[in-house]
Amino acid sequence: MTEPVQRIVDGDRTSVLLVDDDTRIRQALGLALDDEGFAVEAAASGEQALAYLREGTADVVLLDLMLPGIDGLAVCRTLRAGGDLPIIIVSARSDSSDVIEGLEAGADDYVTKPLDAGELAARIRALLRRRRPASGEVHRRFVLGDVEVLPEEGVVRKSGAEVHLTRTEFRLFVELISAAGRVVTREALLQRVWGYDYLGDTRLLDVHVRRLRRKVETDPDDPVLVLTVRGAGYKVTPG
Image (cartoon, rainbow, N blue to C red):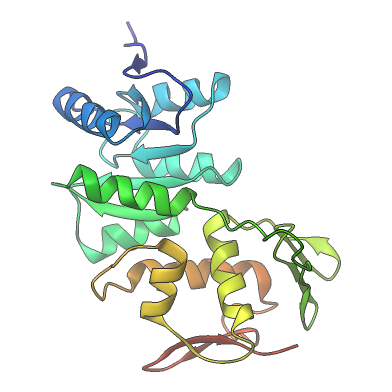
């Protein structure tokens, strides 16, 4: 018999779906995130998580990679194909290849076990934080070749057709565009987009840049919009 999704906390708070097959981790991390102010649902398998999200909603998914049945990478790809639901992988697998594979599957962030609940809570809040235009702010419009970006509307178009970016990809693109052709360092992008000190680990950023290029560049292998400035960071070519 399939174990039901466990409801740890209910209420009008940021909702987290915690997907992990280890009962102790689900319980301990669920309680810790409850203390941090989140409403937590817990699933023991990828199948349970996908079934829950077909019927219910979550603000963010915390996803282990090593799951029985459908593994975490497959779950991540399925969720990402269906929309921009924020996903943080929480895994004991810390090799660079595992981190990159998880991010390439569509995760917004990757945290390795063992972890600190306070750090994880900070990453969740940073991921969910959206910039809202100030009262009376004039809505901006950027044009880069055949790409149009409307930051306040959350819209990107290429050759007139709307391009779907995850919220993290969109925030990254807007940060680069707002620099008006100036180089933005990797450290500055990590802080502004993810809102957390990543201690020099730029894998997160570099994978997201690759994902962004696949969506906005005509030839992602020969980019003309989002450029790497070796030893410094990234910039966009002004329109």
